[in-house]
Length: 312
Length: 263
Image (cartoon, helix red, strand yellow):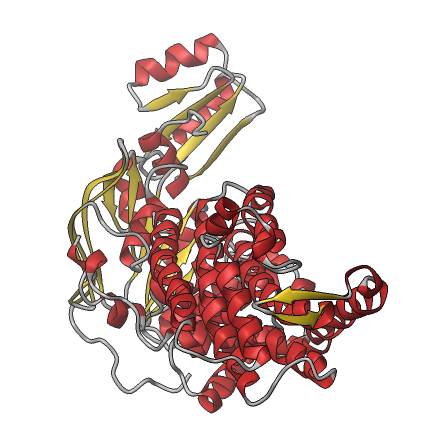
């Protein structure tokens, strides 16, 4: 991508201060504050209905705020919405590609919404199709594309205006592993070029891999904020031992060691800094099988903080 | 709240219009067929099939053939149908099923521009249909030129009026099946009782007066006058009504769509 002439260079690309959103009586976002540094990939994680999509919709000027202050590129979203929107690229959750148009036309028509001149739009579109490995399908109707291709096209479309900020709402939901990894590779490449990213996801692996920093929100409030590694270390520790069908003696043993654990009935989850002694002891004395030790992950943090009940 | 009050319409609405034109151009050969064949069918049915029954009728003090009477009304109806169906069914599909508007709203376009682009596009479809029908009907000598050329700006004005009210319904209905309601309660009565197939003077006085509420009544009157080559200042009432109708439903359409899309 040829560098656009004026890229944003302030310290913070997004500054959200006590942002608040109500739908009738329902409070969707209950006064959250966060800052995204320029060039950073920032994640918003949370269970269904936590307020992720609502938050980012306010950032890209789709939803008006009910209260608070929100600055993007140092500009006020409620006043300078058009200038802000012209420098953001958005991948919405649903694949809103235009089924009436071909792959290439989708990008060209979208470029026109940004007032990009026709000739430049064609060049940019062709370049982006190569970037997402869809150059060979440029004249295909989008209805012929697979889910992964469609998602890549949405990504390409969000890059048509050379954005300073890319907003991704669950970019890989529903994709097969191959497509997901391909999309991640593209996003990492974009990050390498210094583009700032705001991302929501349900996949902790995705957040760990892509995000410099993240927040976990629930019921419209921020539960934690930090770097993925630090959050894991702080809230879970180093390792996790999972024991299937634990016997009662094992339960009393764990309790006696005063270790943090979770009892799911059919499964016991023990958080520990242990290098293996505890695991060896458990497998030797209590259960021969159905016991594993693994590194703690962001998913452990997420479930610990937001609980295991279904959100529907 | 102030940002919702400021005027958010710029010339950028043309980008939305251009998107629709681009899609239309992909299938223009098929889109051209209905406005080309429809007047032919009607003219054959009424000119050949029914002329024995009707023959001539009295309209504004002179005897004219039935075909000459209904030919301009066909253009009026086509203006109504093209824009109304564009901003109801077609816009609903783009809004609800294709999420086209959601995607547009993630660009520098405002909701007002998206809706304006859609409405102006609906009117453009009326214009295209009217132009094609003018060629067909005119070739039978049923339109007097150059006065008949006024049908083109009329198509645009009538198109804006019906596209606006159509978009208002699109902002209001819960699902696409619900368009049956405005079609049967609004469009069909107009189709029959706006002086299209028979002179309004044949109706009782109260019905004649009620018919003045219908924008199609004014559209038909104007289309007939322009086709017959009658142009005078009294027609400003009809033009004024269509303008007023647009000025009411255009902002209402934007308001309804704002409530529907902006969450």
